[in-house]
Length: 391
Image 1: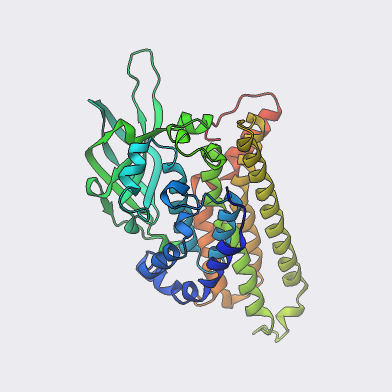
Image 2: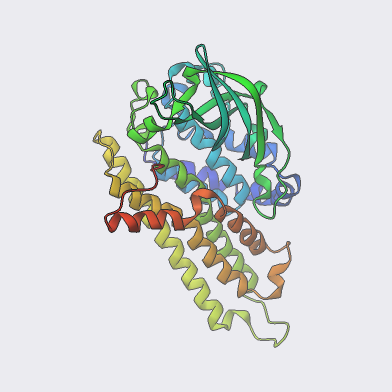
């Protein structure tokens, strides 16, 4: 896989002026503007994790996360949609070839949205499954022609167990429910997906246990070590990483707002306030800490994959906790900056207000709750079994 980051990151950075100019429209329309999606596509960013045999870059995950951070510092909603949509190219590479050809055979730029919550109702049929249900929080769904939807598949026999799978469903078989009316990350357009009895062929499904074992049908066709990283590790970092860019943007917004601001009540220079100075210093430290720990963890996962090994359970649990704790840490740092910005920060016209609102909605994502992952790591250290297999 390619470790060259400068080109992709520079392309993302070049998009800053356009993304910043469209931020208010992105929020108002509750979806990323079409021209932003087109610009990301033209820059080749959606292909970063796509297999080379379909024209993808097979980029190193840390390069991908660097791009997410760069985009999030300009427009959090755009970065969020980019991350979760682009990572689906990586998961599609794990599916049987029939699924990959169905999506990319005619157009390798086709995009996939998702909702992995296992709420679908599944009935076994000849050659596949009948799928029904309503899934929430499908970010970027307006821009996608396929959807990954989660569901538990009933066992084939009375003594079997249900298994979690991802179902690949074409747009003609689902409806988008416009219910995304929220306080933050408004531009992600994370609407609901509704399916009513769609037929999904067996070859258009991916067993989560195969992703956990790093041994999926697509590995035979896409042999890069990139596709032998545990699914639970790569995906969860995708929804954690935007908050790192949000903090970077919030720091820049704080400095721009307060470097020359005087308090309305006392007329004192905000730049000379020790509390504000310390908040900036702590935010810079938090940014560096989570980014460096994340890069270290991902590098370790890649090395295991390159050696043809799966990471030990303890390392997976530790890495998963590190990812789960990212957004909480970033939210705390942004809170400090927001509180030190005075009453002016309450106005939606202030850039720091957007980062404040967006990071708290990002923190609400199930994968970004550090308590469950923290308890799991702590219990493992105390000799208890893992309570989480999304690792």
